[in-house]
Image (cartoon, rainbow over all chains, first blue to last red):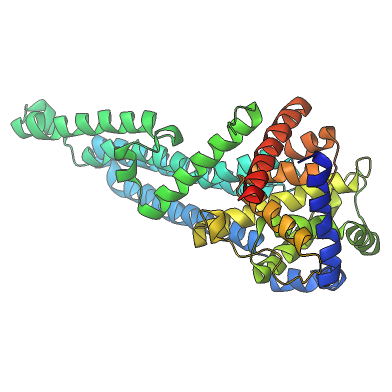
Length: 225
Length: 170
């Protein structure tokens, strides 16, 4: 079959569309402003839902941060470990809020007039952006095991501190650093990764990974046919 | 950049390129009812982004970029919701169209099925090729090099040709 034959088959469709009278675009175009008013557009609605979710997360993060500030202000001076732990949790919470805000900016900047590869890549990266938040938040885990420490435990060589509290904190520190380093879209197929993320989230991340790989191959020209 | 396309000039441009929208929608959305939603969505996104159109470049190039980005996103969401996996799951794309020339219609259905069996990006590429866009413009729309376009188009065509031949022989 020649190229011209393939193109001829394709162009036959023009004629068929005309016959089916489904080219009544003018009426849809005239209704653009109505669509805009009713916010019927699915793409926009999806992105708006994502923005709302991220903004809600920022609001919750700020409330939590405010609560931590109040706690530090009223009780922090009594215990240095509490102050440091709450302070570090506060820091990671604020960092997560900044990342969420950067996601909102990214969503607002999504531009459908960019090349297909570029726009699709950005959309997929957003889909897997939950990963960045999780990476930051795992770093605060060890501080949840240190806020109740007391200077007396160290000074008086408390057995329970050296045998239980400190090893737990060390374990959580190593684990959180390991997770920070390894939580990546490239490890999405690993069992521990699947364990960390819920079903829907996991599917969304693996789907984004699969598509990003496809886009990468497409750009490089390494797709096999 | 020439911002501020008036509604009238926008409507005129859309009207003269309406075939692009319908064909892209049909290529990514086999369901006739949903296709209307997709067409509406494409037009809305074109309207919303009309100020980003740079009149130094072809309107069709800009239009293809927006239409394909919207259609691919729409398709990916539908795929997730409906779990479309194979071409066998697809309804006939042009069942609503009656045409006396059954062979031509059959050929088109076969071709459409082959196109639908391609991934999202290859599908865009071959549609642009069939629409007789130059390789340079296809590269610009897709965001890849002209050489890459030529290699890919040639491979996809070979694949489609082989499968069409196979169907015909069967």
